[in-house]
Every structure is written in C-alpha cells, then in structure tokens.
Length: 251
Ligand SMILES: Nc1ncnc2c1ncn2[C@@H]1O[C@H](COP(=O)(O)OP(=O)(O)OP(=O)(O)O)[C@@H](O)[C@H]1O
View (cartoon, rainbow, N blue to C red):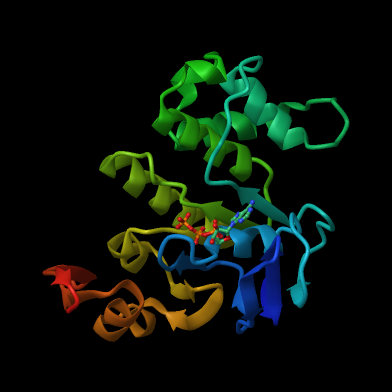
C-alpha cells in the first residue's frame, strides 16, 4: 500500500517563504485527506511541492509504490482549455502521458468507464474550449483519474460544480480511494463536504501545518475561531454526520 510522509517540507516564491517545515504523520492509501485552510495559506504550494513541480527543502517520503515517476497525479486549481483537443482526446492524452501511442482496447474501456462515472460521456466529442466551467473541472478530474496514480492531489476539484456533481465526484473519489488503495488529498473550502467525505484533515495556516488528524478532531469550533476567525458550532445532523453551523464572524 502506498504511503506518504512529509518531513520539514518547505517552499519559497521569490523571497517569500510560502511553506515552512511541514511534517506529517504517515498518510496511507485508501484514505481521503482534506487539505483545508484560509485563502493563500499554502495549500496549492504544498501540492506542487509534493508533486515535485517546485523545489524546496525537506523530504517527501513515498513508499509502497512501483510507479516510479508516475505515482503522483496533480490536478491544478485552474485547468486551461486546449482548443485543439476534444474531451475524449484530452483524456486519452492524459492516460498515455509519455508512453507509446499504441492504444489498446482495455485503455479505451477504462476511459469510457471514467467518463461514464463522471457523467460526461455525452460531451466526449466536444472541443475543450466549448465547455462550461463545471464541465472543464469534470474533464480535469477524468484526466487525473485515468492516469491511475497511487496518490491524487486535487486542488479544489469541486469549486465549479453544482451540489449534485459535488456529491457525485466526492463519492466517486471515496470509492476509488478504497477500491484502488489510492491516497486522495483534496484541497477544499467546503468544510461540511470535508467532514462528510474525508477520513482525515490537514490544516495549513500561513504556510505551516497547524493540525493533521481525523476530521472530527481537527475541524473544531476552536480551530474555526483561531484559523478562520468565525464563531461556529459542530453539530451532528439527524443522520449522525458532523456539520459546521456558522454563527458569524468572531469578535
Ligand atoms: N507563482 C507565485 N508567485 C509568487 N507568489 C506565489 C505564487 N504562487 C503562490 N504564491 C503565494 O504563495 C502563497 C500561498 O499560495 P497558495 O496558492 O499555495 O495558497 P492556497 O492555500 O492554495 O490559496 P487559495 O485557497 O486561495 O487557493 C500566497 O501568498 C501566494 O500569493
């Protein structure tokens, strides 16, 4: 099973230290980890650092994978639209990522299955630049999923989706994490969706790790007051899920 552990991981943008000494316990495949924190806290920077897209001090310890160089897939927050490609072609291109261009039947079946699971099979032949924002986000999720990584880093993957699609995507990611033994880290601002779908939460504040652990232990009224400056209660709904109820800004 894949595991990820960060040790003193940092990053800079120019002269500014944007990530400082982030150390986590071992995070294991099969789990959803919500990465939360205020705007500009360093969530995307953390993902880019884990994915090896930006340099910095510290160690990203990756174990239990045989997909050297392809174990981690990063889905950025802003997904551009390449006008030349159709949805299907773009997903196929993501699947092949540097491999030979021979396409076998099993790969096509897999791509069809991912498009169907995300409910976007009907737009397969549409050019990318003719999609809505939400459709583009779903295509970006498909592009990441077909790479069959051991670790998926998803940067606000549901920010453009309606509530039905949010649930559909987060449920799918939960199922896929369990089924494939994949570690899925999701930067997300919706704390109720984090409480509903994530096993653990990591809180990033000012580029530092403030907390890491089971959602119920991390997403607390005290944390919301200190980190987000809001007064809120965490209450169980009638189906026994924790919910954040916001009362207002903290004094
Ligand atoms: N390319 C860049 N050049 C300079 N500064 C950057 C760059 N990318 C990010 N930063 C800075 O690094 C800090 C962390 O940004 P990051 O995008 O990681 O935050 P975030 O937690 O993902 O925010 P959000 O929730 O708003 O998406 C911010 O202060 C941001 O301005």
